[in-house]
Image 1 (cartoon, rainbow, N blue to C red):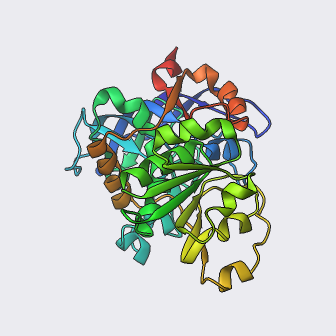
Image 2: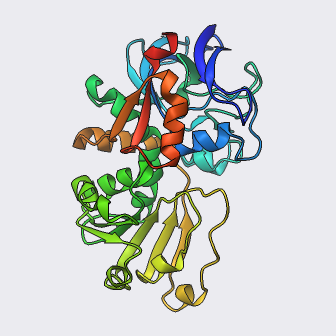
Image 3: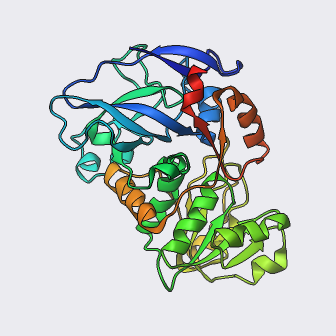
Length: 349
Protein backbone atom coordinates (compact mmCIF):
# COMPACT_ATOMS: atom_id res chain seq x y z
CA UNK A 1 0.00 0.00 0.00
CA UNK A 2 1.12 3.56 -0.66
CA UNK A 3 1.27 5.94 2.31
CA UNK A 4 2.36 9.52 2.88
CA UNK A 5 5.75 10.09 4.49
CA UNK A 6 8.48 12.67 4.99
CA UNK A 7 12.07 11.96 4.02
CA UNK A 8 15.11 13.05 2.03
CA UNK A 9 16.57 12.03 -1.33
CA UNK A 10 20.14 13.03 -0.41
CA UNK A 11 22.17 14.05 2.61
CA UNK A 12 22.37 17.66 1.48
CA UNK A 13 18.65 17.93 0.67
CA UNK A 14 15.85 18.96 3.03
CA UNK A 15 13.19 16.48 4.04
CA UNK A 16 10.08 16.66 1.88
CA UNK A 17 6.77 14.84 1.35
CA UNK A 18 7.15 11.37 -0.15
CA UNK A 19 4.92 8.44 -1.06
CA UNK A 20 6.29 5.12 0.17
CA UNK A 21 5.19 1.50 -0.03
CA UNK A 22 4.29 -0.63 2.99
CA UNK A 23 3.88 -4.40 2.69
CA UNK A 24 0.55 -6.10 3.31
CA UNK A 25 0.54 -7.70 6.78
CA UNK A 26 1.88 -11.25 6.84
CA UNK A 27 0.75 -13.97 9.23
CA UNK A 28 2.75 -12.60 12.18
CA UNK A 29 2.61 -8.91 11.26
CA UNK A 30 0.92 -5.99 12.96
CA UNK A 31 -0.14 -2.97 10.89
CA UNK A 32 -0.10 0.30 12.80
CA UNK A 33 -1.69 3.63 11.98
CA UNK A 34 0.96 6.03 13.28
CA UNK A 35 -0.37 8.84 15.44
CA UNK A 36 2.92 10.46 16.50
CA UNK A 37 6.64 10.03 15.93
CA UNK A 38 9.40 11.60 17.97
CA UNK A 39 12.46 13.21 16.43
CA UNK A 40 15.75 11.78 17.67
CA UNK A 41 19.20 13.29 17.13
CA UNK A 42 20.08 10.03 15.35
CA UNK A 43 17.47 10.88 12.71
CA UNK A 44 19.39 14.01 11.80
CA UNK A 45 22.77 12.24 11.67
CA UNK A 46 21.42 9.46 9.46
CA UNK A 47 19.31 11.49 7.04
CA UNK A 48 22.15 13.98 6.52
CA UNK A 49 24.59 11.11 5.84
CA UNK A 50 26.77 12.16 8.78
CA UNK A 51 26.80 8.47 9.69
CA UNK A 52 28.09 6.09 7.05
CA UNK A 53 25.81 3.93 4.96
CA UNK A 54 22.69 6.04 4.60
CA UNK A 55 20.42 4.75 1.85
CA UNK A 56 18.19 7.19 0.01
CA UNK A 57 15.39 7.96 0.01
CA UNK A 58 15.71 7.97 3.80
CA UNK A 59 12.59 8.17 5.96
CA UNK A 60 13.72 8.50 9.59
CA UNK A 61 11.80 7.92 12.81
CA UNK A 62 12.04 5.26 15.53
CA UNK A 63 9.90 6.74 18.30
CA UNK A 64 6.56 5.57 16.96
CA UNK A 65 3.16 5.36 18.65
CA UNK A 66 -0.26 4.66 17.23
CA UNK A 67 -3.12 2.18 16.99
CA UNK A 68 -3.24 -1.29 15.49
CA UNK A 69 -5.33 -1.27 12.32
CA UNK A 70 -4.82 -4.88 11.15
CA UNK A 71 -3.11 -8.08 12.30
CA UNK A 72 -1.97 -11.28 10.61
CA UNK A 73 -3.73 -14.62 11.08
CA UNK A 74 -1.15 -15.91 13.60
CA UNK A 75 -1.02 -12.79 15.78
CA UNK A 76 -2.53 -13.43 19.21
CA UNK A 77 -1.21 -10.63 21.47
CA UNK A 78 -2.58 -7.63 19.57
CA UNK A 79 -5.87 -6.66 18.00
CA UNK A 80 -7.23 -3.72 16.03
CA UNK A 81 -7.57 -0.62 18.19
CA UNK A 82 -4.74 -1.43 20.62
CA UNK A 83 -2.37 1.40 21.55
CA UNK A 84 1.14 0.30 20.61
CA UNK A 85 4.64 1.54 19.97
CA UNK A 86 7.63 0.72 17.78
CA UNK A 87 11.12 1.65 18.86
CA UNK A 88 14.51 1.29 17.20
CA UNK A 89 14.26 -2.41 16.29
CA UNK A 90 11.98 -4.08 13.71
CA UNK A 91 13.88 -7.34 13.20
CA UNK A 92 16.79 -9.47 14.43
CA UNK A 93 18.15 -12.97 13.81
CA UNK A 94 15.95 -14.46 16.61
CA UNK A 95 18.48 -17.29 17.10
CA UNK A 96 21.62 -15.89 18.75
CA UNK A 97 22.24 -15.76 22.49
CA UNK A 98 21.42 -12.04 22.54
CA UNK A 99 17.99 -12.62 20.98
CA UNK A 100 17.35 -15.60 23.26
CA UNK A 101 18.16 -13.39 26.25
CA UNK A 102 15.79 -10.65 25.08
CA UNK A 103 18.72 -8.42 24.15
CA UNK A 104 17.90 -8.00 20.48
CA UNK A 105 19.60 -4.60 20.64
CA UNK A 106 22.97 -6.41 20.71
CA UNK A 107 22.16 -8.92 17.96
CA UNK A 108 24.57 -8.77 15.01
CA UNK A 109 21.52 -9.17 12.79
CA UNK A 110 19.61 -6.25 14.28
CA UNK A 111 17.48 -4.41 11.73
CA UNK A 112 16.81 -0.79 12.57
CA UNK A 113 13.44 0.83 12.06
CA UNK A 114 14.95 2.85 9.25
CA UNK A 115 17.96 2.36 6.95
CA UNK A 116 18.16 -1.37 7.77
CA UNK A 117 18.12 -4.29 5.31
CA UNK A 118 14.71 -5.69 4.36
CA UNK A 119 13.13 -7.49 1.41
CA UNK A 120 10.44 -4.79 1.41
CA UNK A 121 10.54 -2.05 -1.20
CA UNK A 122 12.94 -0.26 -1.71
CA UNK A 123 15.31 -2.75 0.00
CA UNK A 124 15.86 -0.88 3.26
CA UNK A 125 13.55 -0.01 6.13
CA UNK A 126 11.65 3.26 6.10
CA UNK A 127 10.81 4.76 9.47
CA UNK A 128 8.12 6.50 11.42
CA UNK A 129 7.85 9.84 9.65
CA UNK A 130 4.94 8.19 7.86
CA UNK A 131 1.26 7.32 8.18
CA UNK A 132 1.57 3.56 8.65
CA UNK A 133 4.09 0.86 9.43
CA UNK A 134 3.95 -2.95 9.34
CA UNK A 135 6.11 -4.86 11.84
CA UNK A 136 6.53 -8.43 13.10
CA UNK A 137 4.56 -8.73 16.37
CA UNK A 138 7.74 -9.65 18.28
CA UNK A 139 8.90 -6.03 18.02
CA UNK A 140 5.57 -4.37 18.83
CA UNK A 141 5.20 -2.86 22.30
CA UNK A 142 2.03 -2.33 24.30
CA UNK A 143 1.32 1.17 25.59
CA UNK A 144 -0.64 1.44 28.84
CA UNK A 145 -0.53 5.21 29.23
CA UNK A 146 -3.82 7.10 28.74
CA UNK A 147 -4.50 7.91 25.09
CA UNK A 148 -4.28 11.65 25.80
CA UNK A 149 -0.60 11.21 26.73
CA UNK A 150 0.25 9.35 23.53
CA UNK A 151 2.29 12.11 21.86
CA UNK A 152 4.49 12.49 24.95
CA UNK A 153 4.95 8.71 25.16
CA UNK A 154 6.61 8.56 21.72
CA UNK A 155 10.12 9.62 22.86
CA UNK A 156 10.13 6.85 25.45
CA UNK A 157 10.68 4.41 22.57
CA UNK A 158 14.26 5.70 22.17
CA UNK A 159 15.17 8.39 24.70
CA UNK A 160 13.34 6.51 27.43
CA UNK A 161 14.85 3.07 26.90
CA UNK A 162 18.31 4.47 26.10
CA UNK A 163 18.49 5.88 29.63
CA UNK A 164 16.37 3.29 31.45
CA UNK A 165 18.48 0.32 30.35
CA UNK A 166 21.81 1.46 31.86
CA UNK A 167 20.09 2.75 34.98
CA UNK A 168 18.57 -0.71 35.53
CA UNK A 169 21.73 -2.58 34.53
CA UNK A 170 23.85 -0.67 37.06
CA UNK A 171 21.17 -1.16 39.73
CA UNK A 172 20.00 2.39 40.26
CA UNK A 173 17.84 2.74 43.33
CA UNK A 174 17.61 4.15 46.87
CA UNK A 175 21.01 4.82 48.39
CA UNK A 176 22.69 5.32 45.01
CA UNK A 177 24.09 8.61 43.77
CA UNK A 178 23.60 9.02 40.03
CA UNK A 179 24.81 11.80 37.78
CA UNK A 180 23.25 12.71 34.44
CA UNK A 181 25.41 14.72 32.06
CA UNK A 182 23.42 16.86 29.66
CA UNK A 183 19.81 18.04 29.95
CA UNK A 184 18.42 17.38 26.50
CA UNK A 185 16.24 14.74 24.90
CA UNK A 186 18.15 11.88 26.54
CA UNK A 187 19.25 13.68 29.69
CA UNK A 188 15.83 14.90 30.74
CA UNK A 189 14.55 11.32 30.60
CA UNK A 190 17.59 10.07 32.53
CA UNK A 191 16.85 12.54 35.33
CA UNK A 192 13.16 11.60 35.48
CA UNK A 193 13.84 7.87 35.48
CA UNK A 194 16.71 7.88 37.98
CA UNK A 195 14.61 10.02 40.32
CA UNK A 196 11.65 7.64 39.95
CA UNK A 197 13.94 4.71 40.80
CA UNK A 198 14.78 6.39 44.10
CA UNK A 199 18.34 7.55 43.44
CA UNK A 200 19.89 10.82 44.55
CA UNK A 201 20.19 12.51 41.15
CA UNK A 202 22.72 15.19 40.25
CA UNK A 203 22.34 16.90 36.87
CA UNK A 204 25.38 18.29 35.05
CA UNK A 205 24.96 21.16 32.62
CA UNK A 206 27.18 23.76 30.99
CA UNK A 207 24.48 26.40 31.45
CA UNK A 208 23.62 28.05 34.75
CA UNK A 209 20.20 28.92 33.30
CA UNK A 210 19.15 25.25 33.35
CA UNK A 211 19.33 24.81 37.13
CA UNK A 212 15.64 25.26 37.85
CA UNK A 213 14.59 23.18 34.84
CA UNK A 214 16.77 20.29 36.01
CA UNK A 215 15.35 20.45 39.53
CA UNK A 216 11.83 20.43 38.10
CA UNK A 217 12.69 17.18 36.29
CA UNK A 218 13.77 15.53 39.54
CA UNK A 219 17.41 16.46 40.12
CA UNK A 220 18.26 16.91 43.79
CA UNK A 221 21.35 18.94 42.85
CA UNK A 222 22.56 20.70 39.72
CA UNK A 223 26.24 21.22 38.87
CA UNK A 224 27.55 23.60 36.22
CA UNK A 225 30.36 21.51 34.77
CA UNK A 226 32.40 24.60 33.83
CA UNK A 227 32.56 25.56 37.52
CA UNK A 228 35.64 23.83 38.95
CA UNK A 229 34.59 24.33 42.54
CA UNK A 230 31.15 22.82 41.98
CA UNK A 231 32.72 19.83 40.25
CA UNK A 232 35.37 19.32 42.93
CA UNK A 233 32.71 19.25 45.65
CA UNK A 234 31.47 15.93 44.21
CA UNK A 235 34.83 14.17 43.85
CA UNK A 236 34.80 10.40 44.41
CA UNK A 237 31.10 10.28 45.29
CA UNK A 238 29.09 8.83 42.39
CA UNK A 239 28.05 5.23 41.88
CA UNK A 240 27.05 5.88 38.27
CA UNK A 241 27.27 8.79 35.86
CA UNK A 242 25.13 8.62 32.73
CA UNK A 243 26.69 10.71 29.96
CA UNK A 244 24.09 11.68 27.35
CA UNK A 245 26.09 14.31 25.47
CA UNK A 246 26.38 13.73 21.72
CA UNK A 247 29.54 15.81 21.26
CA UNK A 248 33.20 15.05 22.07
CA UNK A 249 34.23 16.25 25.54
CA UNK A 250 36.63 15.61 28.40
CA UNK A 251 35.65 12.38 30.16
CA UNK A 252 38.31 12.77 32.86
CA UNK A 253 36.32 15.61 34.40
CA UNK A 254 33.60 13.08 35.22
CA UNK A 255 35.76 10.03 35.91
CA UNK A 256 37.27 11.71 38.98
CA UNK A 257 33.77 12.16 40.40
CA UNK A 258 33.21 8.39 40.57
CA UNK A 259 33.78 6.50 43.79
CA UNK A 260 35.73 3.24 43.79
CA UNK A 261 34.09 0.79 41.34
CA UNK A 262 31.92 3.57 39.92
CA UNK A 263 30.96 3.56 36.24
CA UNK A 264 30.74 6.29 33.62
CA UNK A 265 28.27 5.04 31.01
CA UNK A 266 28.15 6.65 27.59
CA UNK A 267 24.83 6.77 25.74
CA UNK A 268 25.40 9.88 23.62
CA UNK A 269 26.86 9.17 20.18
CA UNK A 270 29.25 11.95 19.07
CA UNK A 271 30.25 12.20 15.39
CA UNK A 272 33.96 12.06 16.36
CA UNK A 273 35.63 10.29 19.33
CA UNK A 274 36.03 11.71 22.81
CA UNK A 275 39.59 12.64 23.85
CA UNK A 276 41.27 9.60 25.42
CA UNK A 277 40.83 9.57 29.20
CA UNK A 278 43.80 9.29 31.56
CA UNK A 279 44.46 5.70 32.54
CA UNK A 280 45.34 6.60 36.14
CA UNK A 281 41.84 7.96 36.72
CA UNK A 282 40.63 4.47 35.93
CA UNK A 283 43.11 2.14 37.57
CA UNK A 284 43.56 3.85 40.94
CA UNK A 285 39.87 3.52 41.86
CA UNK A 286 38.92 0.54 39.65
CA UNK A 287 36.59 2.83 37.77
CA UNK A 288 35.02 1.83 34.47
CA UNK A 289 33.90 3.49 31.26
CA UNK A 290 31.05 1.61 29.63
CA UNK A 291 28.53 2.03 26.85
CA UNK A 292 24.88 1.10 26.47
CA UNK A 293 22.73 0.79 23.36
CA UNK A 294 18.95 1.31 23.65
CA UNK A 295 17.43 -1.90 25.11
CA UNK A 296 15.91 -5.22 24.10
CA UNK A 297 12.21 -5.71 23.52
CA UNK A 298 11.38 -7.17 26.98
CA UNK A 299 13.24 -4.38 28.75
CA UNK A 300 11.59 -1.75 26.56
CA UNK A 301 8.19 -3.13 27.54
CA UNK A 302 9.30 -3.08 31.19
CA UNK A 303 10.30 0.56 30.79
CA UNK A 304 6.96 1.50 29.23
CA UNK A 305 5.07 -0.23 32.04
CA UNK A 306 7.28 1.45 34.66
CA UNK A 307 6.56 4.85 33.12
CA UNK A 308 2.83 4.17 32.79
CA UNK A 309 2.59 3.17 36.46
CA UNK A 310 4.34 6.39 37.53
CA UNK A 311 2.87 8.79 34.99
CA UNK A 312 6.25 9.44 33.35
CA UNK A 313 6.30 10.89 29.82
CA UNK A 314 8.71 13.07 27.87
CA UNK A 315 8.51 16.86 27.78
CA UNK A 316 7.70 17.59 24.16
CA UNK A 317 6.91 20.18 21.53
CA UNK A 318 4.34 18.91 19.04
CA UNK A 319 4.98 19.95 15.44
CA UNK A 320 3.49 19.57 11.97
CA UNK A 321 5.30 17.56 9.31
CA UNK A 322 6.14 20.72 7.38
CA UNK A 323 8.08 21.97 10.42
CA UNK A 324 10.54 19.04 10.49
CA UNK A 325 13.40 20.85 8.75
CA UNK A 326 13.04 23.83 11.07
CA UNK A 327 12.95 21.45 14.03
CA UNK A 328 16.25 19.91 12.90
CA UNK A 329 17.92 23.32 12.86
CA UNK A 330 16.49 24.18 16.25
CA UNK A 331 17.63 20.80 17.63
CA UNK A 332 21.21 21.59 16.56
CA UNK A 333 20.96 24.75 18.66
CA UNK A 334 19.44 22.86 21.62
CA UNK A 335 16.35 25.01 21.13
CA UNK A 336 13.79 22.46 22.33
CA UNK A 337 12.51 21.31 25.72
CA UNK A 338 13.13 18.48 25.27
CA UNK A 339 11.89 16.47 22.31
CA UNK A 340 10.10 17.33 19.08
CA UNK A 341 7.20 15.03 18.18
CA UNK A 342 5.53 14.98 14.77
CA UNK A 343 1.74 14.90 14.55
CA UNK A 344 1.34 12.24 11.86
CA UNK A 345 -2.12 13.53 10.93
CA UNK A 346 -0.34 16.45 9.24
CA UNK A 347 1.39 14.12 6.78
CA UNK A 348 -1.81 14.06 4.75
CA UNK A 349 -2.43 17.81 4.99
